[in-house]
Image (cartoon, rainbow, N blue to C red; front, side, top):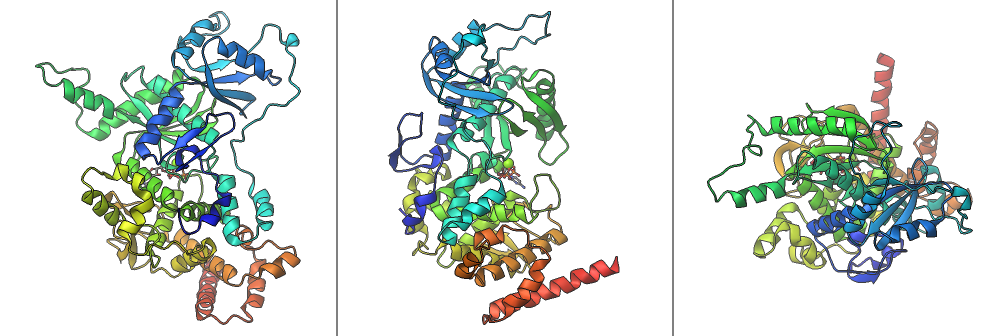
Length: 553
Ligand code: CTP
Ligand code: MG
């Protein structure tokens, strides 16, 4: 499809993004995969999640026996096992009615032992009256991993690769969401939806952010939102008669207050009665009010908010970019991993760059290549306008020719390792004092205000998505980018392999310790490039100023 097809060999794309061919995931039916819109993927996945249950299993499990029991309630379409405080099974039935049948057949703990809230959930425990008679199978259960390998192990793997581009695809392959992990994420949303419906019968709960934008990493949080849009549509349809439903129309002075009230009751409800919901925190005064909780049955940290069209559209935009070219995701995963290793990002909120901002920076860089690798948002919109039946949602159908339509000579050839080095050079030298990052135009534009890092929200122009970043964090990012550009330029793979030293991307994923400054002097010998010299000079300047600061303390 793209000019760098040979680079696909390491790509293990999750189900939602495989395109144009048939493929087979172990245990699942063969799926024909034409291109799918973001909305289609969401609908399909949510439907699948609604036919799914989660079963806690004994440590020694007879898989056949479990499936036999389940078969009496209906056809099991697919299943897998995973470890999360013991072994659990995710079971997808062909029909929703099988779940009702299973729910009707199970016992609820009697009130004398537990005080239970009579809520029929889709979480079950599998126990046999006579476990001794259960013969454990000789073949051990296959447990689908739900977390990525530690960085140390990743570095070892990377050292065995044959090029930096291959290393980047290996990293992508190890870190990206698996088919099973995506199913679990949608199931978590669907289980929360069951609960939300107790209050709001027509509501749905959908994932957004990195769970669905093609840039999700194993272990990342699940961002989910309560959606009343379907309810809204229904209400408008019904408006023809003379009646209005008062309970749906309780008027509050602001949308924000309504959001806070809704989240407050759902938060309390999850806290008091939500099966497996723990550590529920209501953060209602944030710019975007949310409820944080850990969903123990699936093992995810979740952030629940109320439908936020800007966040949904940016998830969709990133989904489109992620599907356009295989290099996009490989570069984003690499930069995000690099940033995490060097403490530039952090899972706790703070003054550091977020993964979302970092992803937008990569997109901007790819728009700025000459020729560009991805189109700007304005170009996408223009294309959408030309095809009257085509809205942005459907653009993904056309992604194979989007590039040639909006960019005269799309950049298909630039290798990943070149892009990696150029990314570091580009942002190592970016004039952050004067310029901001505008993905809509694909241009550096004057900063409208003095935030150290200004990235325009593509869907709400007055919003800076990196407003939280302070000057020291930005400086740290610039210094790391310069150091990394320098390391890549000076790369001597053969020598490093002989010395059994990490090379290429592996060398970039080791924190740059104090030893590096002495190594840096050695590396300086024999460097001809003016760019590198100026990079080093600016590094020296930075070091001197930070030393001065330290002395001043
Ligand atoms: N978002 C936004 N503006 C921000 C921050 C977030 O529009 N300033 C939206 C984006 O759509 C983002 C989503 O909220 O993808 C979730 O935010 P977050 O969890 O911070 O980022 P993720 O993209 O999900 O990345 P991560 O894997 O780190 O969770
Ligand atoms: Mg997230």
